[in-house]
Image (spheres, rainbow, N blue to C red):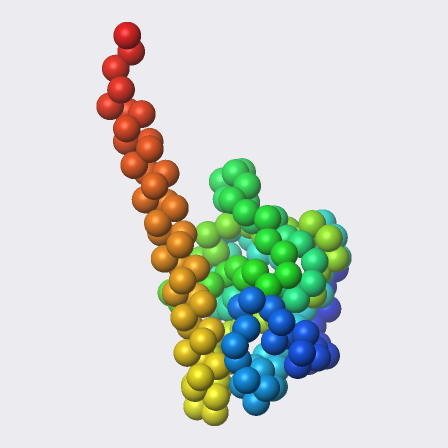
Length: 159
């Protein structure tokens, strides 16, 4: 796995234009940059492995990643999307593999990032937590829809 960690060299305007952070003011974006780090991955690199311990989430700054669980592709994510938020919230194991489709630059958001933002830039923390909440609710709604469809299939009787 080709990966490099560094303090983010991210322009405030570049981060502000990502849908995840749209609406944050400049000071909040600078705080997010100050308390975060970034990682770069080469195409085809494994970023996360299903079942491994997780304590952070990633925001795609550039590139494309594929999310796969139990051999099934769940999503293809690109600039502005994020993943790993479930482990950030519950400190549990990763629920999917994530692989870089192209070279990727990712913003790493940890619990410490959230704690520092909460203390110094509460609006940024609220904004980020609201985005995580919307993502998790969206996934729950989609899972409920799929489960209902499967239940209906099980009730059908052959003619």
